[in-house]
Length: 380
Ligand code: ATP
Ligand code: MG
Figure 1: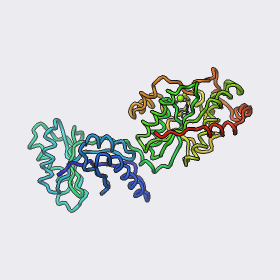
Figure 2 (figure 1 turned 180 degrees about the horizontal axis):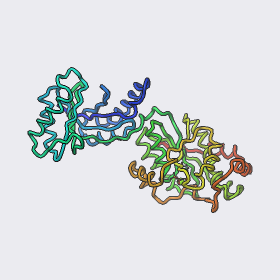
Figure 3 (figure 1 turned 135 degrees about the vertical axis):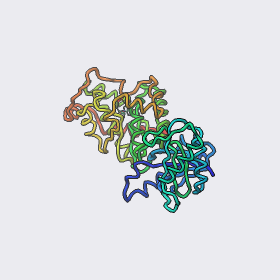
Figure 4 (figure 1 turned 180 degrees about the vertical axis):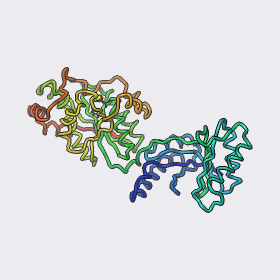
C-alpha cells in the first residue's frame, strides 16, 4: 500500500479529437513539475497519478500550479479487496467529526460490488467505528471517496488546482511587461490558457533607474516560474520618449508612446516566433485605455493584441497578483516610463487619423529600428 497523488484534469475533458494531444502535453507538464522530487507521473483511465515522492506537501504545491488541472487528492492506493478498502476508509474517517458521506465510483466493472453497495457497506463500517460521525448525503462536512480503477483509491480531501489549459498548447505570445500590478497578471492569465509567454520591457534610462529594471526582471522571474521561465527583451526607449515630448502635442504624448511600444513589440514578437501581443490594459482604467485609445494603439499593431484583463476591476487584478506572488514586487515604488512624461490633459477620445498626423513629425522607421537594434535580452 502506498500513498499517491490523484490528479483530475479540467477543461481538457471538453476536447474532441485533439484530446490525446492535450493529455500528452498535460502529463508531460506534470512529470516535469514533480521530477525534481524524484517522483513519477502517469496517465491512466482519465486520471493522472503521481507517486514516489517523499514530500507530499511539496508535490501538491507543485502540481496544483500546473495549468490544465482541476484538482488533486492525496490518496491511498490499496488492493481491490473490500476488506482492505474498508479498513482504509475506517482509518481515514477516525479523525473526522460531524457529518460525512461515502462517495464510491466503480470504474472497473469487474469489481463485484456496485457503487451504491459500496456506499452503503462502507458507510456502515465507518459509523460503527466512529460514533462521532453522522451520515448526511446532501451536505456532508466530509466526503470519504473511493475510486475503483486499476487499484482502489481512498481519500478524504480535494485541493483545487490552477485550472486553464496545458502550457504549450496555446502557442506563443509577447507580453508588454511594465513594473506595475497589471501586466504580470496579464502574463499569468495567458499562460493559464496554455500560451508560452516571453516579455518586452521599455526602459527609459536615466529617467527610470537601474532598480526599476531589476524590479521588472524580478516580476518576469516570478511569473516565469508558472511556465518554462521567461525571456525579457529590454528596449532602450529614452530617445523615443524625448522626441515625442519635443515634437508632438502634449495631449497625445501617451498615446503616441503606446503606438511606438506596439510597433517595436511587433518586430520583437515576430523574431521570437510569437503570434500575438499581450498587455495588462483594462477598459477605462486610464485615458489611454478607452475604446478609442485602444483603437489607436491597435491600428499600428500587426499582430493580434490580447488584453486578458480588459473587463477586470483593479481589485480583481490585485487579488490575483496577491495569489500568484507578484503584488509585493509590483508595489515597490520605482517609476515606470509611462509616468515620466505624463500629459496633464490626455485625450480620452482620440482619432486615429489625427494621432497619425501628429506622429508624422517623427522618423518612425529609424526610431523603431534603433530601438530594436539596442535591445538587450535577459533570461529569467
Ligand atoms: P501596469 O500595472 O501593467 O503597469 P497600468 O495600469 O499602469 O498597468 P499603463 O502604464 O497605462 O497601465 O500601461 C498599460 C499596459 O502597457 C501595461 O499593462 C503593459 O502591458 C504596457 N506597458 C506600460 N509600460 C510599459 C513598459 N515600460 N514596458 C512594457 N510594457 C509597458
Ligand atoms: Mg504601468
